[in-house]
Image 1 (spheres, rainbow, N blue to C red):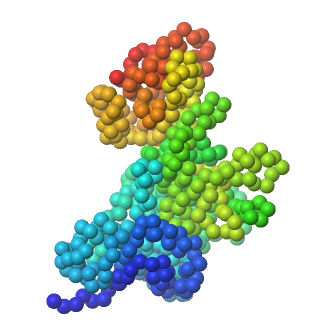
Image 2: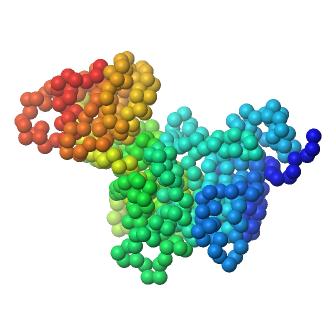
Length: 537
């Protein structure tokens, strides 16, 4: 049997070896310059966590996104930039070049095809460019840690490596390219990979997203600014790009930890990634608390960690939202890496108001600076299907009002019962009916009425729990009109908070009309439903 031509390279994983391969794949950047990139230190921690053992180098790889960028810009440069890339494949299983060559001929050869598939960690495309060399990247996420970490918007990506069918569940990432893309473009590109499979729209290359900005010129453009090379997009240009793929942009203020956690959680649970628009600051805590402004930044959010054991009380009423337990948010930060962790931290910023400084909470990023680099959230941008019309704030406000009445009844009638936690998130009819077997498993609930219920495609779901035990489950139409009754289905365990709601709903009928009419529409809808005894048992 003849020897295989030397096309691929297999080497044991090490960060030093990774630096060398990134540099050789670039052909434009020296290893010492590659080693200074934030991405390298991040990948070191990431691959150490994933226990990477082996890397297979696939040269001459044709990457669609880079090829379109190349044809649109790099091919017309005086400098000769290569059309083809290198793709680095990572495995947790250790094997040699000879073993891999034998496996290509005989799938039963050591380490074995099944072992190779199970150990596959994903890939990184290396672009033959100076500095911005991290191309399309699909890597396995961190371990879910028993459900604490969640990455709901992932998709399966099939990889063909010399005839070996491999698969990784991920969300694509790539480094910012300041020629054909900027951080906003990279964030949009990542989100479109999530929504493209979810809503069946075209997934544009970075160049296309940036080029669309040419169709929308801001009212006050920067002097000397041009589309290509590109240094960034405005909010309006980002919104216009979202409309170009057939989705509707939705912008909400990220005013504080409670709201940001609530919005990120609610839409990610519906498998919709979002874009965090924030200001980066370098907080030099060791240097008298000085703060250096670093400018605006856009990060595609892909996951979160429910690390806090208990929900944080919100407002004067002490409302407990499950999403408030989020202690870390994971995002595709083009200047750091995929699934980069951002941790909520209380910051003592320079201020004459000491109390205000103590209450400031920012997201500590994985950036390197003179001190610690934090993101101060400004807004959340969501690419939504056009039929998702009801925002998170409507359902949150209605449940906040309902919680006030239920809490009074709990203190009066069931003081021994712990306070309920409210879980609010977007879902679909199919996802709801698929998950209720597991959700209602220990609740003693007949699932048949829920399985047979006629429901809209998109739903806001509210699960009410006490000590992780389900009490109530509400469904609201996410496609309707905000001022209309959107309450479409309910499930009750007839215990705990379910009993409290039944009592509250019946007492409501004796209340003055004006009092009831001033409640949020969806709060009234829930009370009316239960006052008629229509809940599903």
